Image 1 (cartoon, helix red, strand yellow):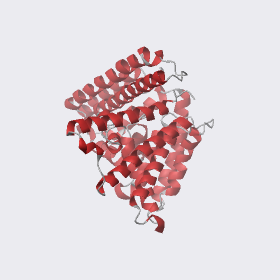
Image 2 (cartoon, helix red, strand yellow):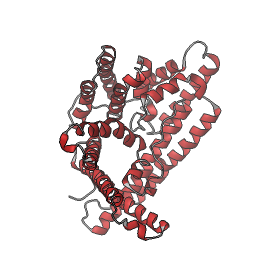
Image 3 (tube, rainbow, N blue to C red):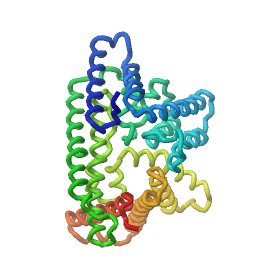
Image 4 (tube, one colour):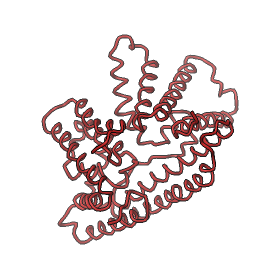
Length: 380
């Protein structure tokens, strides 16, 4: 059968619409006999088994067995600490980032690993998922390759709602997001890539060319990624799963914190809950850091963004771009602290609208620089 990677071509969309039709049929004729979560699970298994590349299917199968063993052993053994299972779950992803050959070449491994870590970390608060729920959560096709990163307890709530989310209104809402996402990814991103980005000599050290490359890549990256996320939301809603929003006008952000509340929202939220907060609490155990809240915040922020860079890949441009984002947030933290202590806010000397424009201009250009580094197009 033809390969249909998520949102890679017409095949995936046809499969998605066929899945919606099957769920709608089951809602009207089989809902008394078989639960929604079993139908969704079956559709996901069929997709992985028959419509992904053979090597990807084998990789997911082996990875699943490994993940299931860790998740359920630690779930039912009464073992309360989460660090060991998290380290074990992360090993395949680390090997993948180190470019180790073998079973670790698994599509979507970074996002799948973060989902597993979240499910393990929140078991004590929200309980464990059963086999069908856990599998569907990890390998839900619209979010398999590039997120958004859902939370297991939120995903489970949609499964528990059953067929109620399969409705005409949700299909229309999903269709609107799908069309917008398709416009972003397949029209605008492709237009920028073909007629702007591709025309630039990435090896040129001319300042004008590098600036041109930076802005074109930033625009391409936004349309491509935001488009993918919108389509994932749209197909998810059609299938009865409310995939969380990932973008909210990020280039209107006025500071780094505001930016990460708008850009790749689910990753920023995940890193805050499962990395920044634990690191922050851990550092406060040391007597040296007590009373040095700003320092602890900045160290935790920097380490968090460093992790984000390494999560994208263990190459210098991903890591350095993460450090840049960490530096932006730390500088903003220090500036806010300075103003609160009575320092002069340089943005307050201008009218509000001009001040807002200045903040947005500074932020968007900072992001352009970091994403230019992220792109690997810097001629070094």
